[in-house]
Length: 115
Length: 115
DNA sequence: GAGATACGCAACCTCGAGGTTGCGGGATGC
DNA sequence: GCATCCCGCAACCTCGAGGTTGCGTATCTC
Image (cartoon, rainbow over all chains, first blue to last red):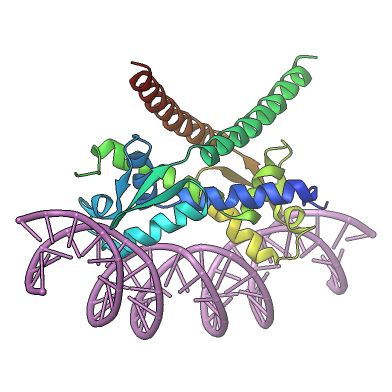
């Protein structure tokens, strides 16, 4: 049993794992929730209402940016961050595929029981 | 700006972050892919075809188990792991809500442009 | 021009995730 | 009964994630 899959599958899985990991932190999930509301926000704005330092928030934003969930636009002295939905959509599709595969397993089991 | 949300929201976010984090690893994603295929597998089986130690795989499985993505059933001298779809379904719903919210933002922006 | 704002960079610290090795102890096969 | 297989527990190691502090530098305001 190789359990590695094709090269494309491996690359995709690496991508997905990176996005999952980026979302696997309470602070970053909170940031995503805020930014998915629509309005771009500066680092200082995102730091307000948090007990963490601006630097910590900055690091989290860079992680989200590396995963493609967010991108920054420098505007004057402040850099505003905006939400980017594509990676999350891919994750949703991935989870949908897993769920569909599982449902197929269940239905196959069901027919085996019935016959 | 508080950006904390209600207590329920915070608790849910903590849960979601844990599941996201559990999936944020290539090895564990691979294990999930294998186990979502339907057939329960022993640790030794899951270790085969990997360059890692059985102990490493065991630790990953425990992480998945803590997140509720998987559960183990001891059977004789081997413990078989089975897939559990519920947490992934919740993540899918969560991503769906974020996506829907974002689409709403875009449509609101569109009407603003059109008027 | 002076002061306040918003940010980036770099050094530093801590701690836990990820991984290995070694060992012991139940099941199993023969 | 004995070798073998499958597993759990514990100790150990390494390294990077998460966080802070300090400092320098544009930028805005007045």
